[in-house]
Image 1: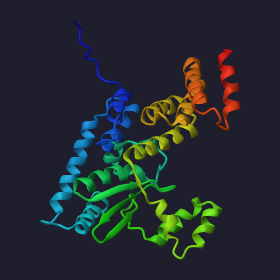
Image 2: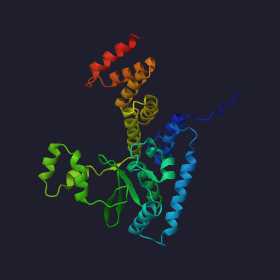
Image 3: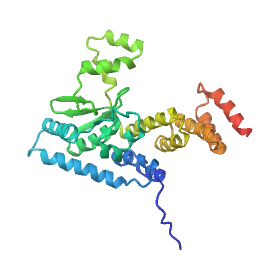
Image 4: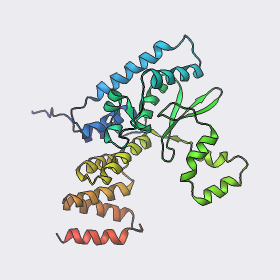
Amino acid sequence: MLLNLSSPTPLSYFASLVQSDEHFPLLEAAASLAQDEEPSVDVQHVLDDVARLLRRVQARLPEKADDLTQLAILTQVFYRDLGFGANANDYYAPENSYLNEVLRTRRGIPISLAVIWLELAQALGLHAQGISFPGHFLVKVALKDGLVVLDPLTGESLGLNTLSDRLSPFRAPADQTAAADLDEGETPLGLYLQACPPREVLARMLRNLKEIFRAQEDWPRMLQVLDRLVVLLPEVWTERRDRGLVHAELGHVHEALSDLRVYLQAEPTAPDNVALRNRVSELSAL
């Protein structure tokens, strides 16, 4: 009897990590994204690097430190001592989403820095979560004395006025009118500060990469990202649609037809229904 001893593909490994929301391994799954760029990336090495950072933070903590002290020391070590921050010179480089590169250069974008920071904060016992804020991913920590919202690029604590200012460009006119009718505007702002589940954090990371590769018309790399998004969000049919369209760009007629037909069956009243049915007819004629 022959045993199949072949190594899992990057996609099958990713699928095994994200199959359940219980104990979702966000750091490991996020670290695995770099394997599309370089299959030899050692995810365990990334996890070990973060564990070393954690020990460095823990070594600075006084005995029985309260949650505010833990947060202050984590911020000091992560941003000041280790120098993590924005890759201002090449903000839209794909490498900013690959945790092995973020750890090597200590440069990234808000969400990649947040994933590492959240792993450290949660390991310290802090009640820290991500926030899928429009335009700029944030993190929050529930302390005994109240909620703190932080910018993961800098560790800066953001007050309500700053958050409202950051949100303003993304509010529809109706939302702005509604906020103006409230005494403090806290209720609509609070809707944007809900905790982001780990699966959605990972989806936002992938969609950042998807947009980068779409802008570059780099269809092979975009296809790899969409393969992961379809695995991660199997019932978000727009990702299946987009994968079908990328397959079509690459001349993968069978795969394109399969994905587009699945989308049309799942979303029969979608506004792009007619255009996609025409595209399916064109592909079927090839």
